[in-house]
Image 1 (cartoon, rainbow, N blue to C red):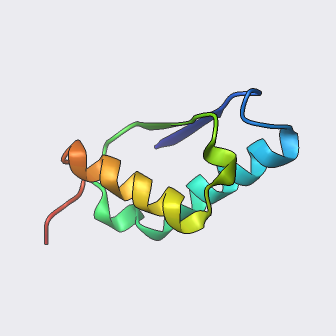
Image 2: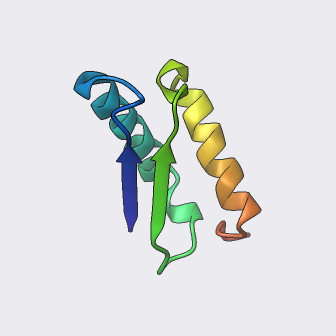
Length: 73
C-alpha cells in the first residue's frame, strides 16, 4: 500500500495534487520491484514542487533501495 502526504506549505491544491499524481505514477511503474506486504508513506517536502517526474522517480527508487524494499532478481 502507498500513502502520500503533501503539506499545504508545499503549494496550493493544484501543486499538491500534481505531486501526488507524480508519486503515484512513479510507484505504479515500479510496483513489481517492491517487496509485497509493505506499507509505504511518501511525504513531499517543501521544494518538491520544483522537481520533475524523473527526480521524483529517482528519489523513490533510491529510498526503496536504502530500506532494502526492492526485490533482487
